[in-house]
Image 1 (cartoon, rainbow, N blue to C red):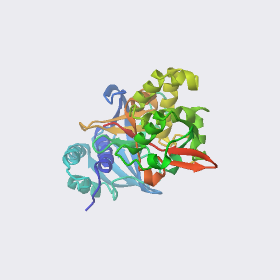
Image 2 (spheres, one colour; image 1 turned 90 degrees about the vertical axis):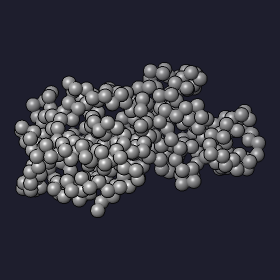
Image 3 (cartoon, rainbow, N blue to C red; image 1 turned 180 degrees about the vertical axis):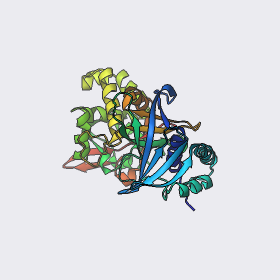
Length: 360
C-alpha cells in the first residue's frame, strides 16, 4: 500500500494522462490550453532510480503504450484503459480529505506499468523526460519537464535555506534592541521591521549570506541582488505578497529610479529571467552556470484535471505565467536564523529570508 500527497500523486497522474492522449498542450499565461499549440509525444522516459529507465512508447496510432526496459518490451497497455484510469485517479486526488492517502486505481496501474514509486528520482530537476516530434527540426527532440500540481497546497518554486538569507545593515540609533527582538506577534518580523523604520532608522542591503547564491543572482544581472533585496524588504514591510504586486510597489515608491536607476520594464524583464532560471535549474546552494536542467519546461496539473505545459516553444507565456502566478512567503525564522537584530563588529544587522510559492 502506497501513501502519497496530492502533489506526488499528480506526477503519476500527469504521466498517465499524457500517455493516454499522446499530446501535451501548451498553455497561455493564465494556464489556459492553447489548442493549436502542442507537442506530439513519442515516448516518456521515467527513471525511478539512477540508471534504471523505463520507456513508455506510444504507438503510431496512439491506441496503445508499450513498456520497454533495456530494449525488451515488458507489456502493452491500451490507451483507452489509461484514459479511464486517469479519470479515476484524478477523482481520487481531487476528493482526498487527508494530506497523505492511497489511490487504489493508481496503485493497481503502477503494478501494470512497472512503477514502484509515485515520484521519479529526486536527484534531478526534471520529473518526466519525453521524446517529442519537433515541428521545427526534422529530428525528434528529448525534453525534460518538472511537474507542478494545482490540486494540493501551493507548490514551492524557490525553497528557503541558509543560502537565501539577505543581510541588511541597520543605519542609525535603534531604541531598545531587546524590546524589538522580543516582539512575538503572528507577523513578528514585519512588526519588528516597521518598528525600526518608524523610528527613522534604515535597513540597507549589504550582501547575501551565500556567495554561491549571490553569484547565481548576478547571472541575471550584476545588480540583481540589490534589486531583489528591495522587493524582499517591501514584502516584510507588509506592502504586498505577489511578485507582480511587489514590483509595482517599489516602482510607485520610486525606488527603481532613485535607488536603482532602472526602469520598471528593465526590472520586470530581469525578475522574469530570474524566475525562469529558478524554475529550470538554478538552486541557491550550488554554483549555477546558466544550465537549464529541466530543459523542456513545466507541466501543470490543473484543478479541472487538464494537463498543460510551458516549454521552449512558448517561453514568453512561461515567463508571464511565473511572474503573474508566484508570491513571496515567509519560511521558519528559527530554522533559517533571520528576523532578529544582531551585532557584529560594533554594527547592527538583520537577516531576511524568503521562499517563493505558486498561487493556486
